[in-house]
Length: 153
Image (cartoon, rainbow, N blue to C red; front, top):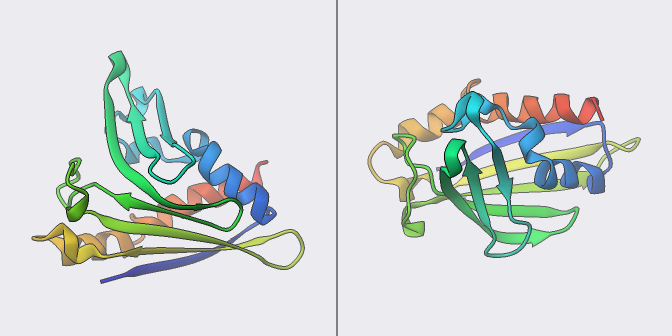
C-alpha cells in the first residue's frame, strides 16, 4: 500500500531540500502536530538514524520517526511512527516509510516526489490510514504548505 504525491516548488533542489529538512518548523502545519498552536519545535535530525521529533510546552517531546536515508539535496527517507489512531508508535517494525526525492526541474524549480509506503506495517486500520494520507487533508495539504513556504523564500 503506497501513496505517491508530486509537486513542483520554485527553488533549486539544494534550497528545496534545505527548506524541507532544516526549516521544517517554519512550514509544517501546526494542526498536524500533537502540540498544535503550542508547538515549540518540530524537526528532523539530518543524518541516518537521526530522530524526527516534536517538542511542545514544558519540554513535552515526542519522537515520530527516524531517518533511514539522507542524501543532501537528493533524497530523504524516514520511518513514519505515527499509528492510524494518530498516536506515536515506538516500535519501528510497525512504522511505514516516507521517502522524498528532490529532482531538478526547469528554471531553478524542483520536482518533489513523496512516496509513503509500507502502510500494511501499521496493522489494523492501515487501508483507511493510506486513504486518509492520500486525501486532500493528508499529504496534499502538507505539501501545499511546503510549496507556499518555498514561494515565499
